[in-house]
Length: 120
Image (cartoon, rainbow, N blue to C red; front, side, top):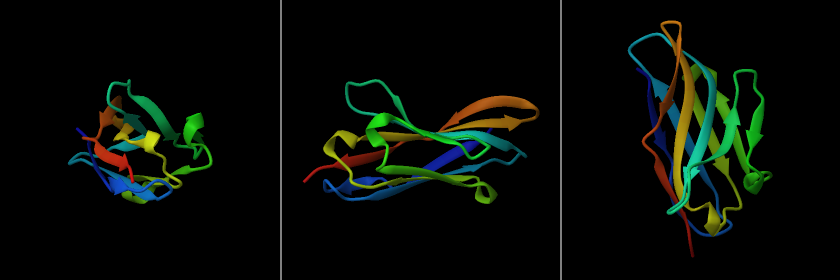
């Protein structure tokens, strides 16, 4: 099984920045295909924020384009989300997600979530 551990959430004022990190680890050998970030605000469904596939292509939900940047350090099995020009509507629990191949099987792993609050 692969564990995803997130860090970097917190409270920030509107217009501020935060950087989220998510590191994958396991006792067994694995390979990561796609990695991404989702978020869930109170009373709303979980939505995809940004994704990065194994080929380096990225995709963003429209509301964060130009403000958020997803990046990966494949050597460290880590994905980052740089969030700039944060808005109150970005407030949510952010979850890391990864499509993992282990023992020739694909599985999907989720992090525990990290709270991001944008407020003055």
